[in-house]
Amino acid sequence: MGKIGAAAMAVAMAASMLACAPASPRSAHTDSYLVFYADQAGARSAVERAGARFVSDEPKLGYLVAEGDRSLPDRLDGDPAVAGVSTDGVIGFAAAVPAAVPAAGMPDVSSMTRNGDPAKAEPLARRQWDMKMIGADRANAAQPGSKKVLVGVIDTGVDGKHPDIAPNFNRELSRNFVTDIPKDADGEELDGPCEVKSCKDPVDVDDDGHGTHVAGTIAAPVNGIGIAGVAPNVQIVNLRAGQDSGFFFLKASLDALTYAADIGVDVVNMSYYVDPWLFNCADNQADSKKQRQQQRAIVTGMQRALDYARGKGVTLISALGNGSTDLGHPRSDTGSPNYPPGREKTRRVDNSCINVPAESKGVISVAAVAPSGTKAGYSDYGLEQTDLSAPGGDVSDGTGLAVTRSILAPAPEHVLRATGKLDDDGSPNTSEVVRDCTAGPCSYYQYLDGTSMAAPHATGVAALLISRFGKPGQGGLHLDPATVEKYLYGTATQKACPASYPLDHKCEGDKARNGFFGRGVVDAFKAATFQP
Image 1 (cartoon, rainbow, N blue to C red):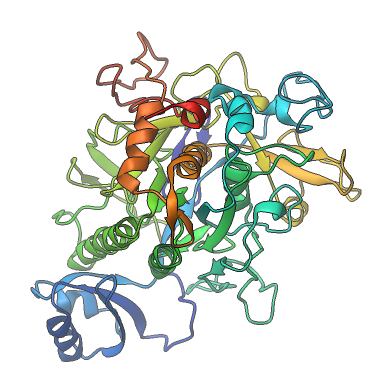
Image 2 (image 1 turned 120 degrees about the vertical axis):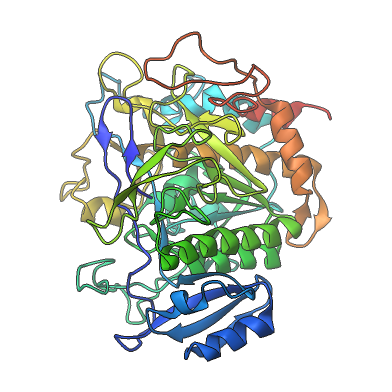
């Protein structure tokens, strides 16, 4: 997803690419393409005239899968039956900023709870400033959510065996839509060696950690272990679309959204955004025909999948992005396409070029706020783009850097060991990792910053609303996404633009809606108690 900026530090996030080796083997001179069509028969004829091989048709989202050489997008350019063409390659990257800074004197409060009483709730609750900010600590007693609500996490996977996720993890409905790719097309390591013979991880595995953090923020149960999520009684469904390396394939993203719609998932969290283009432009003359086709395909394909899901009752929530950018007034893009490295160019862009899925239609996009309540420095913003805001953390919010200003949520132990964050005896060796052993086997948690951390707070609040007002339907309960959106906006705490801001970020709009906070900061307690 390009480069991610934070206020006090330059944080480069690895970006993704459409030229990666696909999941299934094929000729070195043949690629797999997703051909989105305006007319199915016409598109298939065009594919065959271009000398490519038709593989399959996906009528729900209106695209063909075809195999052809690298000139296929050029040969299909201008055909009225074709809406866009993309290689079946990586389109996104999970974005979060590890909070690896000194803990700034934060006491060890692992035996305390949110209200300071060690006898009542979760051992690490005092570290959850984010839950206190949105009233989730009080909301849990009034409305912890319903087991009939299904929350889909479209991410790098979910550690379904984590002690603070397992009670709410729906293994039966969870799916993995990706296959590990040890090396990319250039022979460079992508996911690394496969952990299982099939290279397709089980549905309860997350070899990155990003999806597990998101899932825990949404629905970590109240069970005397670690933390509690915003909606601690709802079910988590892993809809894995991200590779071990954190990259996202286009087709896996489409498949995840389609499956979520078909099984009755109520709300999905999408804490990733699309590469290799920071801004997807339909007809930028600075781009080649193939590049324009690629961007059209990303915009068209994802919008069709999002429309299909929303039409079947799925509320769509996305991270806004960590580029520290005014998405309403983009002027230039100097970092795209960001894969392979060295292909970046400078091109002029305008507001017709969009960030996907944050700026896709029907998606509720969430900006990040810091502990002080101000917009996090890294968070993207924009009057048209910011729908809501929620705690995302910011280590630089205040004097110096402090890890405890970030968001604490579950982390897979094996990932922490693989990245050298635990000693041989299991003790954390970095301030960004916390261990809780108060209830038996130890569980682990990690501090992260990002709009990726803000979005699941909003997703959790949406799950509470569906728990309260949903009616029996497919999967359990159903509440129309338009109603969920209305209630989310109606219960948010409105927040005006600040009189001053430390960065050169202009906040447009009024208290009811502005580019920094949208309709306001999500409020779990209001959502759990208000009467419409």
